[in-house]
Image 1 (tube, rainbow, N blue to C red):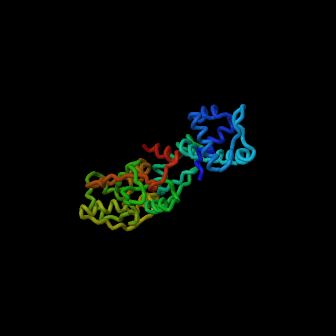
Image 2: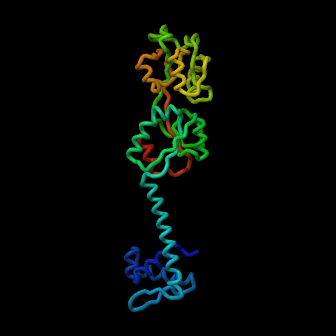
Length: 293
């Protein structure tokens, strides 16, 4: 296989018609250009140039036969390189983002809108699911980035630091007004109907795991798949819900729900993001992730 750089030297000499001018354009010495031409002629077994007093002219049975094809090949390669450089320095294409409905609504929506205003040429493909579902989508190359509830342990993806903190709290409607006030023992909530996320969610496992360290097990009367449904049920007085404070600010401010001040309080969790292992990050995705730093 002939070294590609020999063809590039050949093409430059043919276009310039001079070893000296080709050397200047290629930023190498004239002897190096002459040697490269001779090496290519030897490997191809034919004379590529006629040396005349006017300079270097393509030979009829060598250089002229291959010039056009070499030109086309080099242009294709240069175009491919430019495309790759553009991916690294220009925000274009599609960003496939995976997250839960709540993370999209409460954390990502504003960032996506801000990014779109700055880079209107980038399109978003939003893929919803549970944290574990979206991690699997990432591993199956159906997402470029996943924003997820932490902690998650998976060696097949690259987990990054938190982009938002979540403070799990218990909330209730005025129907349970006796729970207003400070220092409600968390054990006391066992006496009330409880609304909690499904057991297979990261959020539920985090709460259960912490309470287990206190020797407490809360058995919910209703398990739900998303926070919106939990808040609606809590507003209707169906039970005491366990939800991140960041996801129910409007309900708390309006008085439809109030925070049950339990002791001890639940620990703060985080939302982070994950990327596939050993996959280059395009410029557009790097710029989007940078919004969270």
